[in-house]
Length: 155
Image 1 (spheres, rainbow, N blue to C red):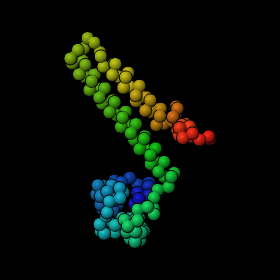
Image 2: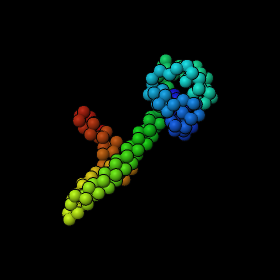
Image 3: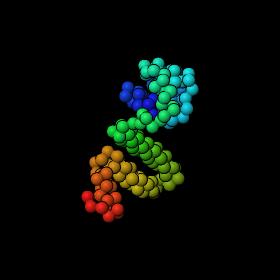
Image 4: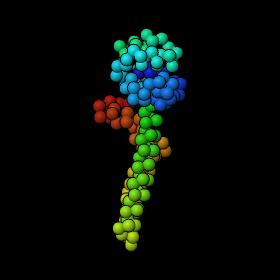
C-alpha cells in the first residue's frame, strides 16, 4: 500500500501518522490494509505526505501498482518477528510471576513452578535464537535446498 510505504519512508508509526493527519489510528490501519478510504481521509493523508490526491486515489483503484519492494517486505516481516518475540517474552515473564505467586500461596513447600520456568523458558530461548538469527538451522538457503530436493531438481 502506498500509504504504508510513504509512512515507513518517513519513519513514522501509525500513531504518529494519525496525529499528523487528524485521523484515527484505526482508520490508518484500515487504509493500509487496502480498505476503501473516504475522500476527506485521502485529502488529509495527501496533505501530510505532500503528494497529489490523485496518487492516493489511484492507489484505491489499483492496489497492485504500488506494492512494497522485496527488501521492504523483508524488513517488515523481520520487525514483526522481533515484535512477536518480545510479546512472547513479556507473556512469559507475566505468567511466571503469576504462577510463582500461586505456587507460594497454595504450596510453599514445593516450588513446582520451576518446571514451567524451564519448559517454557526453552521455548522462549529458541524463539529468540531464531528471530535474532543467532543459530538459524532452518535458513532460507536450507529451505531452498529442501524444496529443490523434493521437486527432484539439482541445485
